Length: 412
Ligand SMILES: *Cc1c(COP(=O)(O)O)cnc(C)c1O
Image (cartoon, rainbow, N blue to C red; front, side):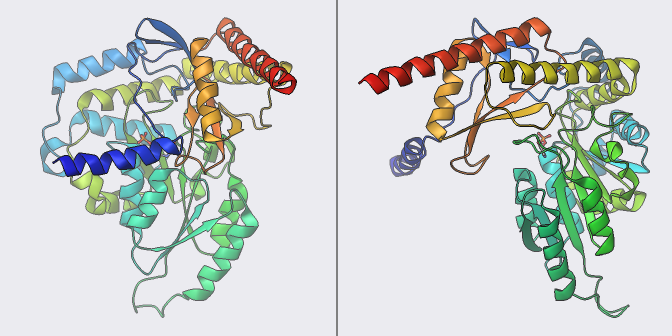
């Protein structure tokens, strides 16, 4: 046993030496524009609760009502006897919201990516992913056994180069012999660590031209892009041309879980093949019912009001940072990466902000490439203008400290 712990401690020391050691931070309050860390209130610019629904009373009431009616546990996997009314109501709500034929919910977005990609592809197929897709997609791409190719981030020319290679390499077999060659492109609508948008129209054109399929992960767009807030596919008017639409229930929708939307055939195949769906207990009735309530809110006037507040807050945060000459990117997105570079520098800036009661996490390798550490600031509809002023003051204070430190270093 001692050997075991010694070996693990050596590995932990190596992680520390690289400045990559991580620890849990216990939060003693619900999600909101502020969270409590012990007694310390922190301005929360860290969550993915974009519409401020994670602690909404309507979601909580829906969850409680589902517990009263269907219990706390679902008792079995969906295919055994755990496919309860709240799961079906959630999937009906997803179809109505996304204006699509069929939907299937999963226990998490991570499980959704693994389940969907591994159901669609096998050894002789090809999967092409954007360089910056989420870890769940990278893991799924490796696990499915298909040949994996990576295109430069948001670079449609590079994607086309790979599509040319893929179609030349595996011409379709004569009909009736073997299976049709499958090429699946996977990308995200709003990138989780950079906040920028995929050039969806061009990607859809390309995949049609080369006979590939497209899977789009709308984790950071569902609820606030498009006239009906369905996501970026709706905003770019390509919703009906994407084979596999994926998302999470854990971000703007304020609950937990993931989903796939698409054709009836796609969903039936997933029910038969997606291992994280088949071999896992169905999600609790509470989380399914909360997600259904969130979808209804997103579809309502309140959803539109929250979306408007979110974007107004995004603009106010960006303008505040620009006013104090803090470098920010040009994209309009609720995810603002504040680039730092060195891992340790990002961690110490995050610590300095935390001392000023502002919670913005430092994001490091392996979540982003080495040497591209950053603070990842996320904006929510839950923030109010006064809170954003606090943010500006905290950044101004950090900047002043850094400047006086530089001056001291020059004198020394
Ligand atoms: C968060 C996230 C996931 C995983 O979703 P969970 O529901 O948190 O498991 C998948 N893809 C992207 C792009 C994400 O940001």
